[in-house]
Image 1: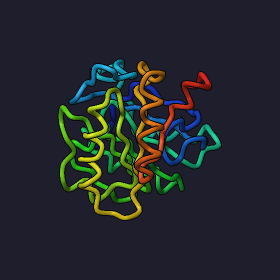
Image 2 (image 1 turned 30 degrees about the horizontal axis):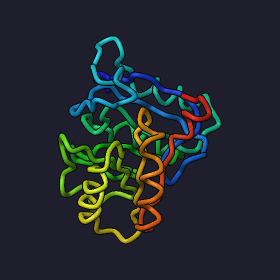
Image 3 (image 1 turned 120 degrees about the vertical axis):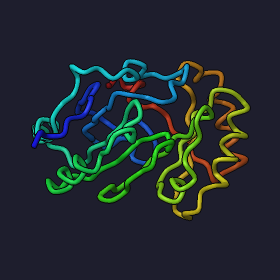
Amino acid sequence: MKEISYPIQESFYSIQGEGYYYGIAAYFIRFEGCNIKCNWCDTKESWNIKKKDFVPIHKIIANVNNHQVKTVIITGGEPTMWDLYPLIKKLKKKGYRIHIETSGSYPIKEKYVDWITISPKKIKLPLQENYKKINELKIVISDKNDFLFAEEQATYIEAANCFLFLQPEWNNIFSILPKIISYIKKNPKWRISLQIHKILNLP
């Protein structure tokens, strides 16, 4: 039986720069393929699926094992386009904590997943079923209309312990950041998420 392979754009050991777990050491696995393709995306190189980039599960895990890491973050592109269960199951057997970052536009199989971050996109909204599963809602803010979108998305969250983040779009950070700070001061259920890996010049 042929081993399952996935299209991996890149994988690396770095620091989580965003959201609730910012600042922790983590191993990132970035999948290829995206169904949304935001114009401000900072990982456009992950959009297209290339045959040459498919990596078998055993090699993915071997790469993770080469580092002193406890947390593995599966991101993209859009990782939930793929059946992640075989990979996640084997990573959990190795004792890793698994985080997934997704737009929520595909079904999320949450078994063995420790932390789910959804960053909704207006082009293709998350599936309603996914709002029940997430630990973290992260909204990228590029203009004032995004605040309305953020509030709308927050109404779908059922879990009382889901953290809510507003993150400035990096290319527009200096003009939008003061607005986010002001908004959070008036609406303290939200937290700010900064891409500190970019500030630190990390991958």
